[in-house]
Length: 385
Image (cartoon, helix red, strand yellow):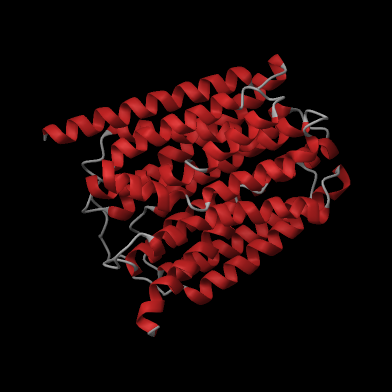
């Protein structure tokens, strides 16, 4: 096969490794490590939710900064620094028991994860412009699921008991570093924006769709953060905690490819609405915290939709704001981050108050139903224009 034909796949593989490090590990490794860490440090669910929330608060700040037109350095240079920060902040989690320091480290890691998503996607999508087919972009976004699957493997490899929580963070940091190095070697430099470029606001992205995207962040993150903790809370289900998270990641791997196909057939916004309904079904399934079948269904439906919905949302935002694509992506990422930031602290407080995640999951599922309705309303409005 000629080198020119291989290049899109090489770039996509670099993007896959970048998202595996930045998102799959840098963001989501907290979920499988949480039960051991919380047990070792004697955390309540509210404290666990605050640490998760700090990561998502950092993600929100990072998303806002990543859209700035003042960032004129080569995108790969920024991405390289970002991936290094993610690896260091992740490994450093195993060096301290100080709650404020852990909050700070997760906040830094969250900000870097947002930069990783925005800049890796910017480089990859720019390099793949004009390349036919869904394959290379889907490989890029599959990196999140790949990273989640890798993070699920750390627990049985290193140990799930409380005394292993430090080593789990160190192993995660090492994996993020390896993935980041591979990404930097494979990705092109990209083009820095010209001074003043991107100053325009992402006009055309309806506020209702921004709200829908925020509800997506809130809707998926509660189950995604605490599902392994839910499994560990039942003595019968505890041996399945690694498998549940592995299934979550495995479902995420092909999700962008599948939802992109669906989006091309029925439209990006209707596909987003359908995915939101599927995700809501997954959240409602997790209400049965003592059923292995229900929790595996939740893993499949959430893992199989959250990255697909991210890609659909990005695609719709770029279509609605063609003159400011990076700023549009950053705006949507910020909305997503805002929803994520609220979810875990809210769910942790509900769990401590009621002894169950039920009320929090019901609220999250209802939010996803509203997101589906808002997406359809935006689609209807766009057809009238």
